[in-house]
Image 1 (cartoon, one colour):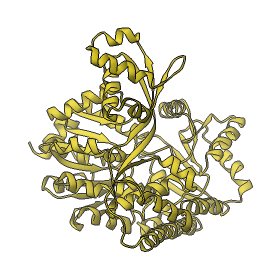
Image 2 (cartoon, one colour; image 1 turned 90 degrees about the vertical axis):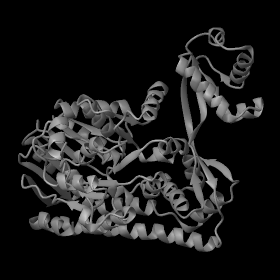
Image 3 (tube, one colour; image 1 turned 30 degrees about the vertical axis):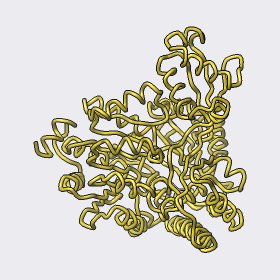
Image 4 (cartoon, one colour; image 1 turned 90 degrees about the horizontal axis):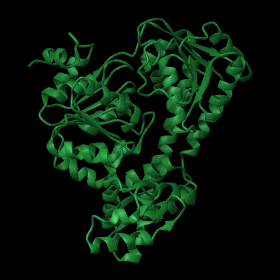
Length: 540
C-alpha cells in the first residue's frame, strides 16, 4: 500500500496538505525529521500515517492531556488502535493499557514527557518494539526557545536508551537557533528539516500603541462591533483575565476568564462553552489555546505584550483556521515590559540559595527522593528552576531519576473490612489488618503513609503499594494518592563543586539574557505596526 492509498483508506483524504508528504517520506526512509508547520497545518498526520505503515509502536510525547484525549478519540473513531497514558486514568484503565502494550496491539501511545521519568515505565518500553518517537511542541526541547520544559531536554537520551530508530519533532514556531538546537539533539539532517511559512493572508495583523488607561475602552469598542463572534483576549496575569472579563460583562459582553488558577472542572466547562459557541469571548492567560482546534475564531487580542515572538505567532495562529478573514490586534503598552521582565528575574535564582540547594542534592545517600514543592519553599526557588537544575544534573551524569511515588494514600472502603478479607488466607488477612491499623482513621477515609507502615510492619514498601492497588482493582477500596515525590539515584560527586555551581548559575544567567532579548524583540516589532508581518517573516 502506497502513502496515498493509506491516506485515503485510513483518514479519508485524497491528497496531502503542503509539506506532509516530504516529512512522511523522511520517516519511511529511516531518517529522523523536523516539521515546523503553522498552527492548524496538519502536523499530527505526519506521524499518524507512518505509525500505520511501520512495524511497531509509535510513542507520541505531548504536554497536554486535553490534546492527547482529542487525538486518541479521533483515532479510535477511525478504528486505529491508539491510547493515552496520563494522570486522568484510573487503575483499571492503566492495567488494560499495559495489557495492550504487552500484546503489542497498539499502534500509537500518547504520553506526557514527565511519564518518561518513571523508571518502571521505561523498563516496560524496553520490552516493546518502538518504531517512531513523535515529539509534539518540540520547541520545548530548546533552552533558548519559548515554553522551555526541562523534561523535554531528556528526550534525546531516552530515545538513545530505548534504541528508537527514528524521531519526528513537530512545532508551530521555532527560530533558526531553536530549530538548529532541535536538529542537533536528534541528529536530524538539514535536508530532513521541513518548514512552511506561518504567513496566512486571511489574518489581519495590527499593533495599536496605547497607554494603560486607554486599553480597556479600546478593547470594548472593538469587541462591541461584533460581540457574538468567537474572540480570545490574551493577558499575562490571572488577575487581569478575571478583572477584564468582569469589565466586559458589566458592559453587556458575554465573556469569562480562563487561567491555570481555576479548578479543572471550571476550566473544562468554560472551554466547552467557548468551543460550542455558547461563550463568544474568553479572557485567558497562555494556559488556554494549545491543542484548541476551533476553526471560526474571528479575533485574537493581546491585551498585554506577549513574552516572545514565538508565543505571539502561536497565539495568533489560532485565529481564522477556516480561511476566512480574522483580526489579530496587539495592544502595545510599554508598561507591560516591567511585569514580563519580573517573570524572567523570578526564574533566575540568586547564587547563594542555588549553591545551597545544589549541595543539598549532591549530599544525599545513594537512593533518595525529593518533593519539588518542599524544596521550593525551603530555598525560595521556583519549581521550574528546581526542575531545570535536576535535569541538568541528570544530563551531566550526577543523578538518575528512578520512579516517582506518592507519600500519602487516603483509603475509603467500599465494602466492610470483614468482606474484603474473606478471599485471602490467614497470613494475608493478618498482613492487611496490620497494614490498615498503621493508618489514621477518619469518619470517611483512612490516611496511610507507606513509609510509616514500612517502619511499623518491617515489610517492603512495594509490597504495601501492590496490596493497596490490588484491593482497588478488586473494587474493595478507593484510593486517593497525594504528595508526589520523585526518586533519584546518586551516580557521582563533582570533582569541583565550585566549578559546577558556577556553571549552573551561568546557565540560568544566559537563559535570563535570552528571555530579555526575546522580550525586546516583541517591543521592537510592536512599534512597527505597518510592517509587522514582514518583520515576523524575517525573524523566523
